[in-house]
Length: 440
Ligand SMILES: Cc1ncc(COP(=O)(O)O)c(C=O)c1O
Image (cartoon, rainbow, N blue to C red):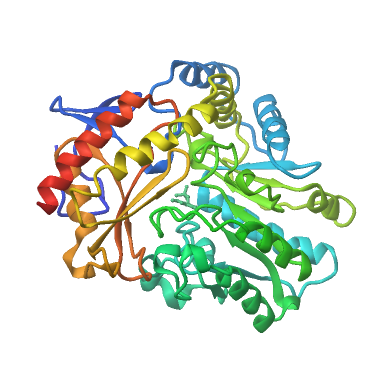
């Protein structure tokens, strides 16, 4: 039978996965792969957890769909309650969508309408940072600062301003961690001032930058300063926790590491554990009250948002994470993962940087470690590592442009949160063999 699927890369062949369990995928030829990056940093509890499958089946037997504009349902209400309590901030409310870009679009529109509710319609722009990624829909892409993903669509993107990222290994301000004065956060303040705070509705940032900075952990003080800037200019702070949330960093929300409560949190990926498409926006009480006390509605949404089957899956995933103490497991394994990866650095001078938090590790490759000079983009180093790894049965998440938006190669290792030390050792051992093939 002719294969009619329209694949992302038309000249590649794609193994067909026929079974997935824990962090192991098996293809139709019987070959096994270690899923070291949890799909797209998204299968946070691994594949095939029976409790989640059972919860989905049970809900399917009960109700397959309700439309959130007309009905409510118990799993959505329960999951909303759980997330509202887990999230920082007071009197939170939660809405469900079907993925990360939808959650970001929802957050952006919510911020815009919040200021309309308050009688300040001039506030509509969203400030973000270069080398961040917020999703591929046009609104989320406009907010994002991933040069390669924006390039082909640039004439279609919205006029959203961008500030400098925290990219400490290639600091845009020439600083080291020891000399850092949070110039990047102050740059964001300058952007707000230049654009005029009366035009800015929100700032959106990933708490730990994932795909476009190959895991960049902000310097201490960065997020508290961002919170302070947003408060001073009356701008909403949106945390895009699509990749960093749901336990990935060892806290349910990554921002808990810095004790900061954003105004809106975008979630997806790990929330449904990739058993089913699910995203969410968590909003603080002050936003809820602005709508409640004024127009009484924020009627934005998508057909599948808040459906009971996805909510039942999410409810079970979150319950599974809490019940099995996976946040603790993630925190306990952080040093082991990073330590094992660092032990490879002597052998491979091409490893310039290893950075991470929880079970979220970035490995950046450079041509010259002493100067941190990246490889030329035409060397396609990320592709070479990711493709070789796949050939050798290891699934890695590639990150391109992490030096300056154009150059910079790396891979992310982010196994499911329920792995053991032995699982990590197996991943690192296979990674070692992959690097040997590419670099030695
Ligand atoms: C931080 C962040 N936000 C948003 C998205 C978009 O999520 P989705 O692919 O579910 O639309 C991603 C996807 O990688 C992401 O990493």
